[in-house]
Image 1: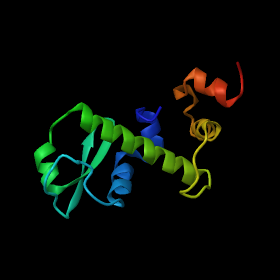
Image 2 (image 1 turned 90 degrees about the vertical axis):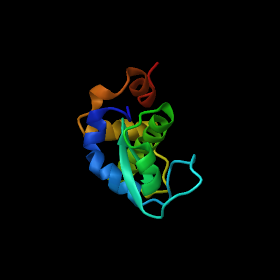
Image 3 (image 1 turned 180 degrees about the horizontal axis):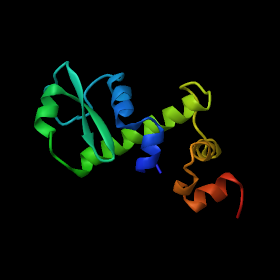
Image 4 (image 1 turned 30 degrees about the vertical axis):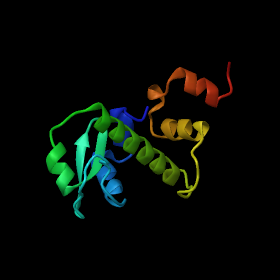
Length: 125
């Protein structure tokens, strides 16, 4: 669900994800001995990664499973933060499956929901 382009678009798009990432601190690439203090973002399917300028220069145009997993984690956390905000909760709230389903229905994304998730949210067998 969190990798779906329609979900990412309804949550605000990749520009919004990148802005959200830049509000955080530190380079997300742990495999470097040195990090610049300046941060940027690098788009990597399905989302983006916050990197220092040094790591950005090293990793630009690379596509690895490790980078993908960071991008997936970022995209998931960002979508959940958008859902939280849109439903009127603060950042400390943990979004439940029914809340996520409701947000998706409100945003015309019901077709993206896996049937198993919808059944669970509706307490159906």
